[in-house]
Image 1 (cartoon, helix red, strand yellow):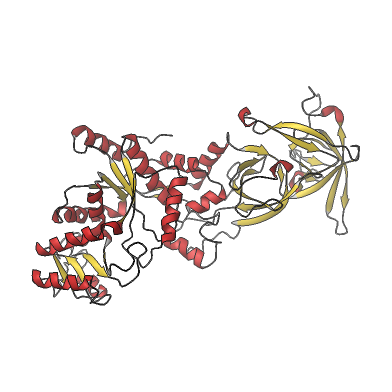
Image 2 (cartoon, one colour):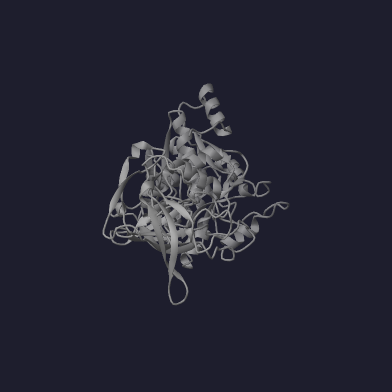
Length: 544
């Protein structure tokens, strides 16, 4: 799927045609303080796809200007996520690569009388800022001399001033209608170890100052971000101009995309992990890219989902079913279709010879002959789903097995139930049937019409398996309710059953369509002799 026309694409076309830009350069600038989620995938795909359409390039730049929360572990995880999605950055940069240049530009602004060292605490800076209807109040330090500001800023850099004691602020307009323009902080003091620059720096630039300068240094032509940064754009442009950047980038904002029953916040996802509500960031119920990958989502499905939702200037919400449908569409022709029984009930064929085994050659995917065939064994004892049997048919529409009724065992034989075996509690533990050897699949035309088709697994060769049956983690998308009040108590159910013997040596992340049950992926905990599968998505949406 290709990206459809949108306002950013149109802007890029016009900029190239007019000569305003010679090359499209975009960037993806994540902060390495968490794992990426599906919302970040939209930003990644949008940046890479738009640049690629015009023969441009996309840089990966880690926004590592806040060392308190950042970690090299997240750097590697983000690189892995981008590679998994199928993209290769033209360059990999770090915001900290530019600390010296950013510092030099800050000194330039002090010399121009456009920045000053402020002694106000963070709370006081906030309090002095004013409101939407009231102008802010100037800092007592706003009129410090250039010489004093240069001296104090150098002392800040040398580590001679404690955390929180001083900041460097831009001198703009404390009465500006846009509060972001009311002398924003450019630098703060943090005596902490940095994952990249180690202990070289103890002052760190704020995002609003660092980001536009970094875009300018890298030659970014179109700096794409979400809608909440619209009010920051005047500040973005002001810093580029006043810091006298040689290249002038431009910021463009697009609406956020929300997905029903899906958490789109790093902060909330972290809360779930820390509260041990989930089993980590790669829990297959999580909307993190590592979680979606473990669940069984494909990069192609996520890409098609993002491209299918389009790009607009307003925030929007789509149903999680759209993402699921993209996965079904992607796996329909890719996944081998095999048999698995999640809730097993033993079926014995009374007139089938004891000790006899025969085989059937079955297509791996009836819609895609290129996936070949597999050999499946059949014998006297097999496993079927408990849900496919009722001692007495509940109604005339029952299309499964009951006493006195006949069904086809998919791609095998017709069997007719003649009785059941129950345990001391009165529970059915075995179904007794007879089979008609003339009805072997592929033998030709048969006049009888069975009461339905059910899947099965040969008990003699079946492999035990665990199935993680997953539902959305959240029951609703109500932002006014706590995430802990919105948790789905049935988001993870475990079943013990069987799969065909052909799956003995499967590799992790291999996808299957278990016939009639849904699409499944081999989990990371799976190993030979202890197979584990995650249900990625059912064949049709069923969650309410």
